[in-house]
Length: 198
Image 1: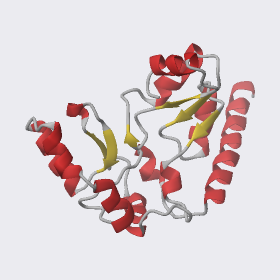
Image 2: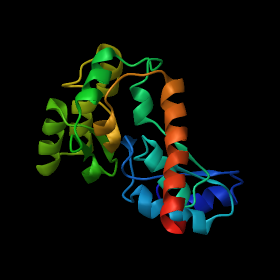
Image 3: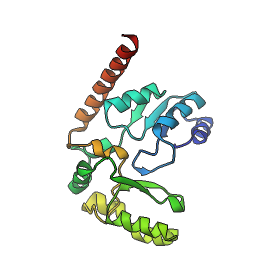
């Protein structure tokens, strides 16, 4: 969820934990960043909070814990895993991505989605600027995620990914990705502790 009010509503409905997902994440996004959202959600609910959005390495994992999360949900970094069944060209597009290669489409129609910039996205954003209707925009994106995931069409497909795509450099096994994230996170916390306490 991307707002404190949503987290509180789910807790009142009986949720045992909530995921606070910042706008850095891939796919459908809210407006608040993970850095701003997680501590506010952690302060507002009495259940465990899991941070998501913009987390692909140990430093970000450690930061999430420091913000009040009990753990993290990662997505984009797992797209570049050996086990992920997306098309190889999708993975290659992620590995080529730089820090500023994602953007958000759909804000004008209330359905913001973070994706890699490509031909389809440029057309979509141009139509949005011209005031296109939801129906016009949906014609352009219909089947886009399927084209990217299954067909490897990274030019006219919807290549959903988070802002951390620029941090991905190789395809690795999930076990290796998560083991390194955890170990690097603990190391980052130890460095922080040493910096504060000498």
